[in-house]
Length: 324
Figure 1: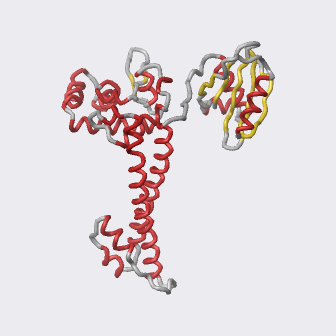
Figure 2: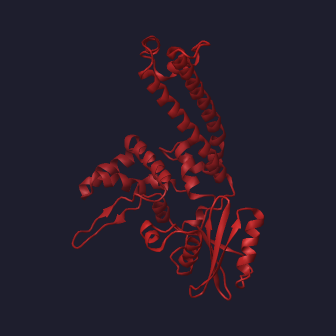
Figure 3: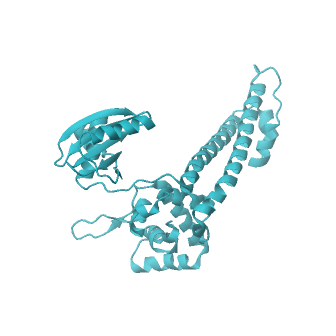
């Protein structure tokens, strides 16, 4: 959800966004609900939505300030219900009260290009993994003659062998049908291999253009270097500090104290893809980088648990400089 704030008479507009439509709502400076309306998610619809908001108050000449608003938690939704107008009013109220202050990603540069290409790459990897799992499942129940033909083969020779199978014309026989299915799955696996290689060739130069210094850091490869800028966006200045990026990536410990017990716990929320990228970098550095290994070895002597020190190394070791 997003919202828009203006001066005078001061109004705040909230928008509950969807794929085909957006539902907008407007509140005044003391939070009273003024109006709500649905608009198509088109260029003309966006203009009509903004004109409709302007009709309820005077907007500043400088334009529109857009704020990202988190969706309400489950408890709040159970208490207040769920509908497009409710969510739109909630977005406007969150900004008017100061609870929501996040600047959205601009999505207008090379980082956005990297993000959309990586979406396709992840899909191709998922399809390749599914094809491989289905091949192994089919081989478990395949006729013995076919199982023995490919027994002991590693993945690459297995895929090549299955892709060359000749099932014959009579698919009413289980052996022929199994061969036909395995051949199709193997060729699908090969097609995904080709697609992933093509995407890697396209993404690599873009990542180098977007974050050349990031790739120079120890333990950072093209995959992790592509994810971190994508999580930050083309306007990383929207994050006010390194600590803000740590919260975005879920590596800033969360207070979990009670009474005389003072402790922190790991953050299980935030951007999990960015968290996974940092985790991968830390694992590589823990194995091969002397500074990170020294940090991890020293942390337990300070009273920290080893599990916590791994998360801390994401935030406090040189790996934290991966923030774009």
